[in-house]
Length: 83
Image (spheres, rainbow, N blue to C red):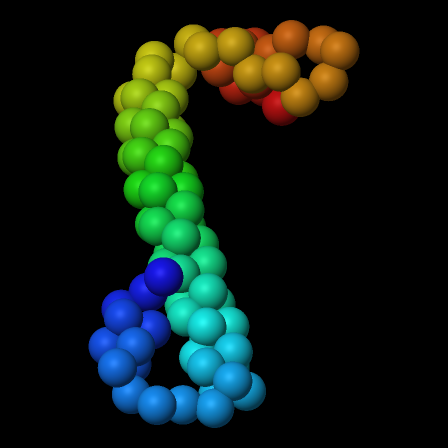
């Protein structure tokens, strides 16, 4: 069990209070697990954002002749000068 239950083992409590404490302790453990999962997910998402930002910067610095695909037709920087 959790630390709350361990501390209160020696304190005389009614069965109802002891059950409520046990349930609260389980909820705390569940929430702590969820926090760890969310922190891990957050770190993964932050890393993904860093990678996407680096890719965006790379694309911004690519030469102007980079092919642009906005429709079935393919345009290059040079062919778009007259548009």
